[in-house]
Length: 170
Image (tube, rainbow, N blue to C red; front, side, top):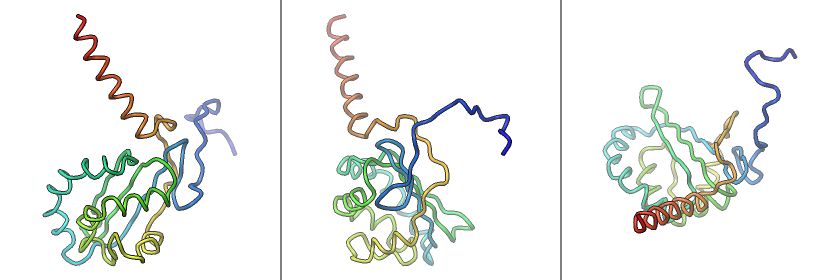
């Protein structure tokens, strides 16, 4: 295969590999996962009605979990389908168990009556349901693959403390 002129063959990024215990890709400490599903009848309106509360509460629930770097969700195909994606730390099964154990109410508020067939965050059928709808990316990049959510939080607290110290001595 001829080299592509716009790709620098000398450039090397950290290794991207399949997540070993579930769908998705990982790079260093970080992993990604996406999901696609059908929107339940009336689900688009239900989601939009809940969005202000969901958006206001997402930081609280993520602080309880402490593993998610980012999350996004959107509706498409005339509000008949949904897509969501997460970038998170660690292994898939551990992350999913923590998500369901620590924030089942938020997860249910997000998907119940919105994602057709969603069995509920505490359902014994959730894992099988998700595995039917989750897909990994074909291409994945994260700028700081070795920085966990904990590492980033710690660095930000250190920067803030240093700023306070420098302000105090100036």
